[in-house]
Image (tube, one colour):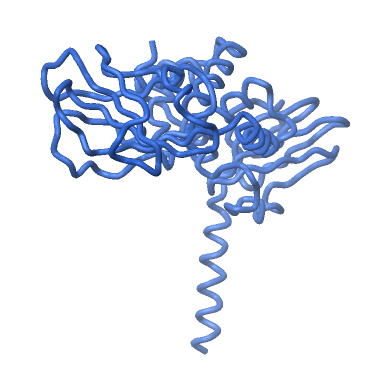
Length: 298
């Protein structure tokens, strides 16, 4: 009897969880319509759908949906698709697109207040370790580890003391006492391209910034990628996108995923591209502005 009661309870809970699935139309191409609550409408980006909705695709059409359980999936053959029959596709890990990105896009497209794009870091893995050293320099945890291939992206810091001159030092991984590059700077940042001549692609380096005349033993990590290695990674991210993704959507997705992977200079390029391709998109524009502010980009 107890086993029967447990089975019934389990079935009820499973049914409740199933009923909680909701979907969102992320992108589409061609003739796509939706039947939801006995009403048929044309496909609309950002439209939220119930589990009982039916998505209809004409010949040559495709559609990509988001699920509130952090998954993305697509249909690309003509026909009718009742979403309640595809709950397995809602499970994280069933698709190659970053769950972080899916959660982020879902939150941005359903929020009704606040500045879109400003809280993307809450959905990323970019938070570094808490600083334990005591000095007058503070580096944003997002810069604890930076992956870099190309571009004029700066390494930046804050100063708790009033100072105009700073010492920047770069160290190789096999010698953390003698810098391979050092420079006195008059701003609280330095473009990485200023010292790429001192580095070799494929190696890891460490850097520090200190008020002129002081010492800062807290080192941050900089991985210098070759063009080939980065392009392989970039190609892999591009391949994860859905067929129905627009060029602007792809650029924005790549920007988010590159930032999440600590490729900040490369992410900046794609945030700019997304904004250029879709200038009416408030999310793209606000994210670009927020990114510029976060990383001292003018």
